[in-house]
Image (tube, rainbow, N blue to C red; front, side, top):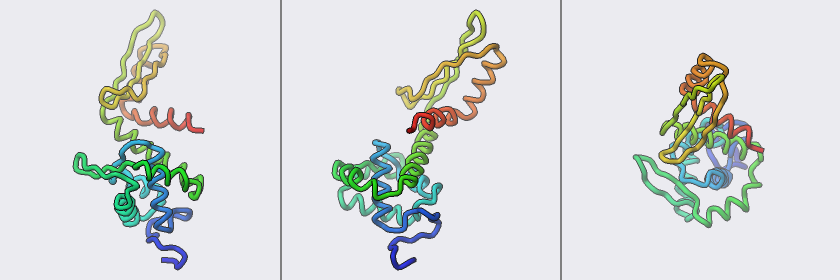
Length: 185
């Protein structure tokens, strides 16, 4: 551990979080950006896949944030879920610019991708509707009763319509994340 840093950096890429405070700020920023409870497992996965923070530092930071009243902890489906409190939201808004822009963008993009993959498991459908000429293919991604994404594509023939439906069914996350990515400014 370098003397100017106070966090373990094993597995952390260049540009990743090297202080305990930065790890805490990043976690608050992610939770603020998602504005929903997020599981401990997914938070760890986000920060491990992006190599932004050490696994042990993430867990310590979550415990410290909970102890400090900046996040609320709930237990659901054999995992801990964290959500920012109002105090945590204020801190995240004040300190988010202390984090490099690239770190913020990478962390939130990875979190949204993992969250969308998790949600996609709950329900997808691809419906083909015959037209006078061609087909409409309606692609839907649901989270329970909530429609997360629904789009209608035109296909010239049944072969193309079935190919679209099959590609969507194989990897619905690809469509969802592509739409989300294209809308980010």
